Amino acid sequence: DSGVTQTPKHLITATGQRVTLRCSPRSGDLSVYWYQQSLDQGLQFLIQYYNGEERAKGNILERFSAQQFPDLHSELNLSSLELGDSALYFCASSPRSTYFGTGYTFGSGTRLTVV
Amino acid sequence: GESVGLHLPTLSVQEGDNSIINCAYSNSASDYFIWYKQESGKGPQFIIDIRSNMDKRQGQRVTVLLNKTVKHLSLQIAATQPGDSAVYFCAELNTVNFGNEKLTFGTGTRLTIIP
Image (tube, rainbow over all chains, first blue to last red; front, side):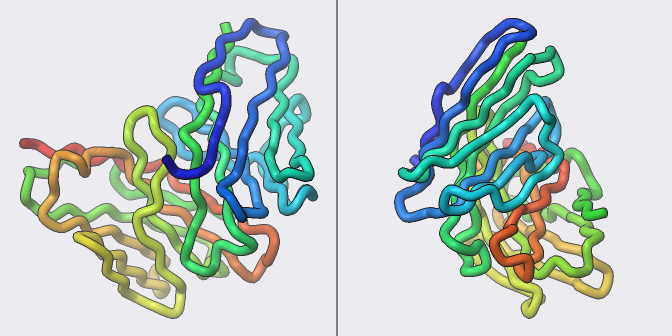
């Protein structure tokens, strides 16, 4: 157990629908990152939150949004889902800065299947 | 823009032999690098990291080498075991962007250990 909890583990939904993925960071970590991993692809950075505030954005679609709550858990909202949104979505957390050798800690991911 | 690439998408190694996984990065401003291991159905797992002021770092059975001149990173795994079979990602980070610590990942190398 990495300490980063993602729910649900699996999600199957239809095109056009909206889903919410949830992430609880490791205790004490202030930063939360969301990544998308398509089949046999690398991890594409979507968005970062630090202590409740958006800090960095990657190639995140306008149909996607995220937020980090006061208790530091984060939610990734995916709307108007398309078949191409099917992927593994990972959440990672880190302390204030990754420079201190700890790197990120990843959750086990949510597998989203859009049918 | 930033990119991290891997020279070999797949690598098969006999059990007990050493393996070397290579990675090229393009952002000369990157000053922190991490290797991750991802097993099937799991999130990436931190293996080892290295800062740009170092050219070599050793862990348990793993060694990371950094050549900033040619912007090249490698992961050496000694005495490979069946449990080493996984996809390995390198990732880079520019820590000067404090608060914007998004790792950029390569596409990964699938390492298969042959019994």
